[in-house]
Image 1 (cartoon, rainbow, N blue to C red):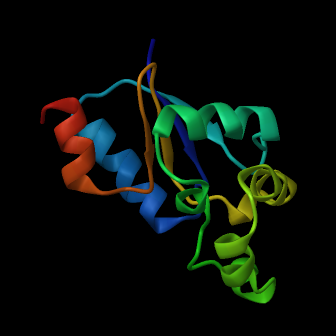
Image 2: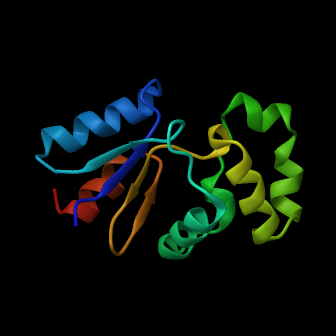
Length: 119
């Protein structure tokens, strides 16, 4: 199965990640996160696969995150409530996401992506 590249095309980090995938000849399926918003069940599945805490899925540098004063909420709320918040507004989700059969890479870190793909 090809990795699923969940991205927001206007995001410069997403653009860099896409370019990296293409330069390394990694085939992927692309999904526009705004046009195809992940639902809570899907986010839960990705969370479990990532083996990361739910707070890693938040776009903490986003305007909406700050406007909603989510820093304290993310620190104090449970996973289920945080997944509800993430599923209500896709701009809260950290991008890009790269989903494979065995891992979810959150955000674009060249070293982590290169390590995963042995590049």
